[in-house]
Amino acid sequence: MVKIWLAESGADCTPRSFSLEKYVKEVLDDFVSDPERRSKCCLVFLGEVLAEDVKLCDVENMKDKYTLHVMVRSTSDPIPKLQLDNKKLQECREKFQFLRASKRSREKVIDEMSKDDFMDGLLKEFPLLKKDRMALAVAKDFMLSGAMVMGKQNTEEAFLQDHPILVDVIHYWLRDINVPPKMSHSGSSTSISDSTTPSSGQGGHAPIVTPQMLQEAVAQAMRNVGGSRTNQRLSSSSTSSSRNSHNVPGTLSASGSTQYASQLAQLADFGFINAEENRRILEETGGNVEQALELLIALRESVMDLGDTSDN
Image (cartoon, rainbow, N blue to C red):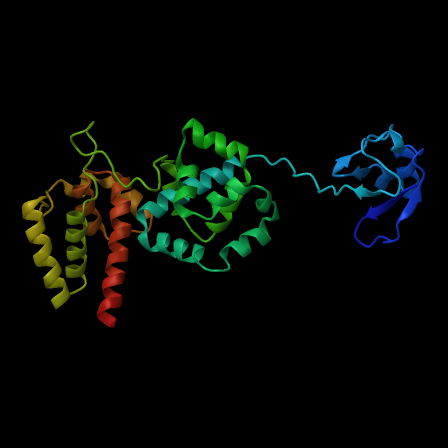
């Protein structure tokens, strides 16, 4: 006779005795009557699952009074097959493109991701994320997420196809980022970590938004809202910088009012309605609306930061 225990949480801990002449199948049928549970059961001896068509006496190393265990296999719910949501992916790309230009919004997202309860909230919202460790590793990293979403190489696209939940998660933690309605036309695939743009000497592209350009734009904006010691200091610094690196015209040409008419209309659609300032920015960027938007957003945030500093 051998002793057999049912190894299951909440089960009766009293062992039962069976003859060595019994088949494994007979033991299992006797132990578990419910058909559904029976299909999940197996008899284990010395760490090995025994075949049901074998007699106990024929099991290698089996002896009288030995102990065996009936194990009930746990069956977790199958992971549902998710599909990549291309609409959400496009929205994520537009938002990451916007975050390239908006330092304030970018820092807001990163600060949110740095909170202690950030991951707890994600896992509560997306329980399946626990079962996809690779997607989990990317989803909690701002730079990695941006690289995967913005990259359009085979590697990134294959990863998103294999881990579609990643797009859902990133779309969720970008939910508070609002992109200006017409900014989505660009559809740029530039990486969030790539802040360079071809210079005017490469393929005829407009100059990149340089620190000197931003400095001059900030100085001009501050002059527009009234003189102060801060404005004078910015103006003096920007004038010196522009002499050394980038010459910005002091006045608009006679044709300036019509030269950038369509671009000015686009900037107005984005909420930038200061026509004089917009023309200066467009002259600086050679009429490139996307670069002008980046500069205007950076300009607005810089002026807000300066205002906060002066208030303090």
